[in-house]
View 1 (cartoon, rainbow, N blue to C red):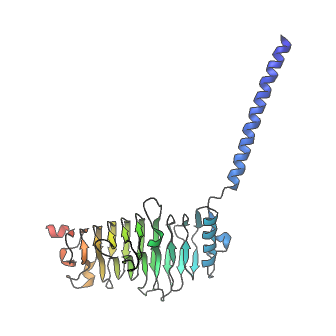
View 2: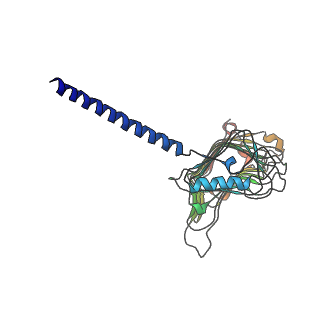
View 3: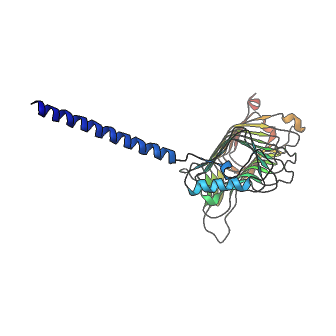
Length: 329
């Protein structure tokens, strides 16, 4: 009996050792896998240097391309550094470009700064125009990408500043100009745009006559957008309906700081767009009846809630709705 008990005890000990070995083996493998997992690509590993005055465009693009090819999905530029761009970037599909809160990209030249493909995104950072010759788009989306609801395209917590004093360029540009091209359900949040000719521009052009199909920019959201000292703050260029439609776009929590250079706050060609805005210091513009907000003949069903009296609004469309507490009094 004693011998049998010893065998039974030995079997238990052997089983425990086997389990412990198996658990240790699995833990070791998991640790190895975690060590091999790359969470993001640091653009400085590809030659970007935010502490000198050299062009970082190629290095940042290499980092984006690598992240896209290897399916890593994120590129980081961190720290209170100043990176120089002398050439435009293509933010590839399914790549997030994440900058530090105070990381700057200095734009030195005249070129489209960054074209955003579908499922790509930009988080944080400052895009600063330092060259007076700049007269292009900073952040650009093209309807050829076919942005739709199942994509995760977004622009979040970004500042776009023209510090050159030229009052040129476009902060955010959405363009659709061919058959079956569209930009829909993209989210733009917590964005500051300052000192540009145009803050936000949406343009849906009719497809060429030899192409069958539609072009549209519909259902996009701009939330907590600040426009400071822009000549034209928001331009929506299209028509009421197909073949080139701009409709159902939402602008919520919009703050507009006008200056003596401001010519237009909103110009709307399209339908069912919704705007909620606070517009500051219009007295600086002189003429009280100046048409700061324009609904063109190609507009219908748009709504505007602002602090401006209706005397600032020119409405050539139909069924547009606008209200102000000052009108109610």
